[in-house]
Each structure stands twice: as structure tokens, then as C-alpha cells.
Image (tube, rainbow, N blue to C red; front, side, top):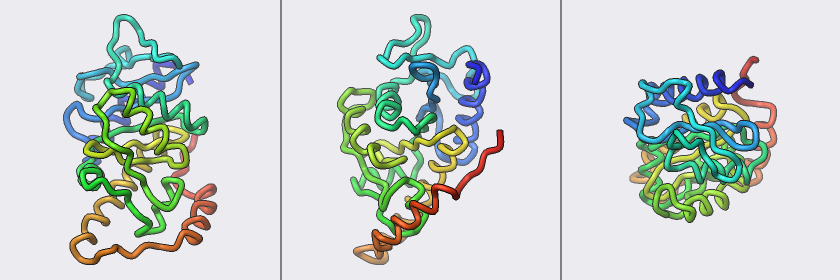
Length: 215
């Protein structure tokens, strides 16, 4: 797809993420795989002020354009693309419920079959490291090796999918799961979960189920 069109899709996704209540201010970032690297939101510019020309290209070795500053989190976006060849879009946000669970440093367990949308029987929580650091990108690479979504301890959420529409759908689904999990915690410990063999069946079914995007 042509660069300007992809840049517009990134901006539209950012605006929709805010509209859905999944992000606030200049927090979070969005990218798509492009050529040998990615296109990613710039650092510190509010989404409603973004233009297509401000979206930054970062190559596969982490080299950006000289006249633009990419999101401070570009390292973990690149780590996802290197780890998951099936991912063409990555969304990161500070959604309230996902961030709340991340502060507890817990994965979201299999409380509902929709957990399988993340690729397994939980949404893991990657260990804390300073934002933008190489250490954090290494934690993300480990967490995302067998998952499409992960929490970041004391930070937020990452979701990756084959396109932006599916990545945003997944981010929203994980936020709903996080909200449900937080509601259950004061009521019952441990929270009941579905068995792993059932989640494995649902993961297989999800290969032909979920958000359909017409092109």
C-alpha cells in the first residue's frame, strides 16, 4: 500500500483509539510494517494535530528519518515485527483497565474464551523496564513470541495483528477482558478459568473467526 494511505490509516486509528477510550493525550503509539521497516507515529504530537507527512519511517535496523522524531517506543514496535512475521500493525496504549492489571503485575487468565484472540490461554505481562529502552523491547520480544497481545508492567498494552483494524479490535477486546478481570478480583480468589484444552480449541476456531476487513 502507498505510504500516504498507510499514514492516513495510522492517524485514523489513533483518533479512533482515543474515541473508544483506549488512550489519552499523547500517550500510546501506532505503527504499520512498511518496506524493510515501519511507519510509526511521531513523538509528542497530539493525534488530532497529526498530518500524513509527520508519520515517521524507521528502517529494520532502527534508523529513522533525519528530520523527524519517531515515538520513543519505536524499539518495541520493531521488536514485534522481528519476532512476529505475521504482524503488520502494532498498537500500544495506556488503556485504564489494562494498565490497572499491569500494575498488579499479573497476566489476564482465561476467564472468557475471547482470551484466545490474543493467541493463547492468557494475556501475559512483560516485566517492567524504562519506556523506550532496549531492555523493554527485549521483554516485549519474549512476551510476544507466542502471543498477539501483552501487558507491560506498570505501563500499558501492546496488540499486534495483520492490519490496523484487527490490531485495534484486539486492543479493545483485551481492554474488555481486563475490565472483567478487575471486577472479579474482589469477589473470588483465585478467579475461575477455562481449561487449556478448551482455549486451544478456540484458538483454532479463531483462525477463521473474528473481525473481517473488506479491501
